[in-house]
Length: 500
Image 1 (cartoon, rainbow, N blue to C red):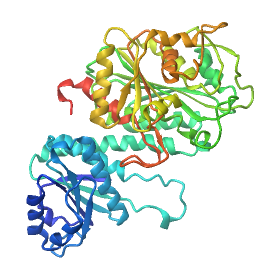
Image 2: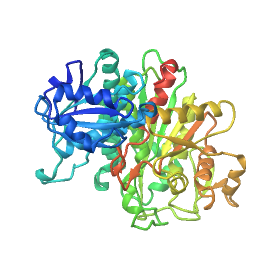
Image 3: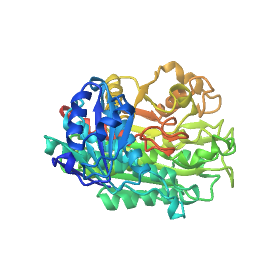
């Protein structure tokens, strides 16, 4: 979708649909301006519209070059934030799609936010709200007509609006990269195919990608990844992504680790099909988020030295699948008693976290659809965030929570008290791979913590990564959750005085 900014009077915009936000605060003034531009059709529409949030009305004015005019309620302007802007923009995108509009203009609302921030949020919401995954549809008449062009109308601050709009477009497109990877059919999404997708992205956008095959993984003694892969006919991969700008703000790299289980049957601890295994093509959502984040970092040219690690395999019950009771020697040398083969994500993440030590990182962030318990605790809108206690822990958590609030990919902290690790005590190995039902999202994080000796943040995105029911700008299926969160977090590190 092409995105541009203009100061041309909105009555002169030649588009299929003109979207005008109207707040309750400025309702009288806004309606008067619209009447002056478009005539009495505006007055007649007011019986169905009062500026309340989420309300809208479409009319067909005679005095306009735009084929349709839609007023969208912004509600109380003083309460408007970036998330409300995104959701309002997504509603506008839905209206455009329903009317098969190919060209759309959106008047940037005066919502008390700076123009750059408002423009970014509006474009993010509109582009993400217009997303439809129709890769496998074969009947052209059943496919959604794509919106070709979005024009933002501004009265001033054109330069800063343009900056925000361009950033919003780039970030939204990188979220869509992650969505497309998640939504891909499992038969087309082997570990090798995921690695090749990362290589293709790296070549296109100018960051590095190095894919390890099974031989290299065996040489590196990544026992957790190899154990999960034993039931598969497809070999595992381990992909290393690199972004090394000329003058990074960090002397030591930040490492992103994404869980890349391309399909999860549960292994011999087989999942039920309905509402469980049938959605497990999404179990590589963490890996997809890392790839989308690298695309965004490269396209935005952020001055942050970044490494990405993606351990990938499927988890199946075939061949010589690892079994409950098996003891696995991990990359770190630690031994793990496997009591549930469906707790596989932590096994391959642990190897990647152990390998991350070789970079002497400033910070490591892992992102994974790790536990159903996170969904029970926080639902489908919010991800769990945890960190190892010690120096800087509070600052790390606060920075990630603030990035979540700004980006709309919200996170909520969970405790990491030392007592939680007792549940992982094994009689035959260094630790078990599961700690029981109680606090299982936390004990999973405590398992991962065993393999880190550096500042670390864990993001459990099991809830918001894949939706069964659509939300305003998040569709059914893969959402790309985590890309906007991580990009905002990294932008803040790169320029802490320019937080949006």
